[in-house]
Amino acid sequence: MKFNYQARTKTGEIRTGQIEASSKEAALIFLQKYGLYVTFLEEEVSPFYAKKIKLFEGVPAKDIVLFSRQLSIMFKSKVPLIESLKVLSAQVKNSNFQEIILKLSEEVEAGTAFSIALSRYPKVFSSFYISVVKAGEAAGSLSESLNYLAEHLEREYHLTAKVRGALLYPAFILFVVLAVLVLMVFFVIPNLTAVLEASGGELPLPTRIVMGSADFLRNQGLWIILLLFIVGVFCFRYYFTEKGRNFFDRIFLRLPLIGTFLKMVYLSRFAENLSTLISGGLPIIQALEIAAAITGNTSYQKIILQAREEVRKGEQISSVLARAPGLFPPVFVQMALIGEKTGTLDSTLRNIVDFYQKEIDRTIDNLLSILEPVLIVFLGLVVAGVMLSILMPIYKVISL
Picture (cartoon, rainbow, N blue to C red):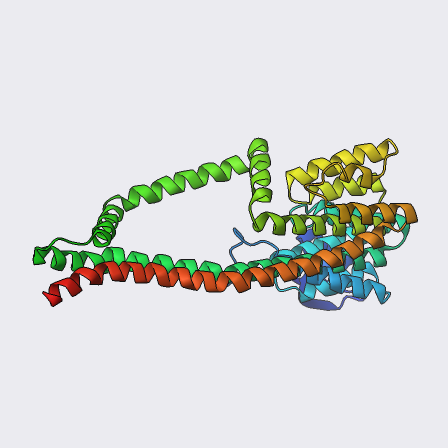
């Protein structure tokens, strides 16, 4: 927020200007710190057309990635944390995130630990993020912890962006198929139906099927959409229950091709999160608990939490993971075992991450190379089938 102020110096000189702060109190404290006696302080009122609607305004993942990387670089360059936060707040374009960073700088300046200040914004900074920062503060290695975080968030962001990009083309093809079918059902087929029925001849079976299907969709289309909407809402609400989440997570892992791909994503995420937390100085039990919470699948979460309990009793992580060969392949378990025996679990997990990242990239490329021609052929067959069923009786009439 921007505030217009008027103040006097110790010598009585009048100063006016504008200051940016998260609140009126913060702006007042900041001005008093420079020896100014504030006589007027008011928030700048923007015209209604310049105001931003904050109802759906959040903080994009890309902004958090950039913030973490820039903060890591500045902190590594010996720039004080408070000054780094103030500089970054001026660079951020998202007004909501800018305000959060300003509040963080004010809280840190007031003596609050950076991790505690971050924990007041759980919707922006995850428990994983906060834990790594907290471990870095405790070990006196905040610079290294911020660097780990930046690298981790960048990898997560690039993976998410690649998966979304891979789904964009299939989604576009399916949209085209639906658009073509809607046009034919509501505009093309009704006109041709009147012409074909006027001819008086017997229509071929494919033509009758297409015409009957189009007639059914025109008459019952709204009910079908309503039914699909109700089923979708039910599935969505059921997914966010404990039983629903367990059911869907198990189903997704059993799907052909998709299940294998998801397993690689979850294994890579678990290995990277655990490696980052251990490198950041967190105890292994706490690291396992946080890694379980952010893995993203309840089946994996149960095994990881079980490993946490067994580690508490003196067991090795690898011995627990070996009990779930369907989720953790032998290669993963063997690598984890070697890391535990040599005391280099964090670096071993990082090697696993590199391996699975390459496998994920290769799988996405292979799926796209197969999916693109399949979808194009599917689109062609749908359109050709509908057109052929319509042209068959027309050709029959012309030949007669």
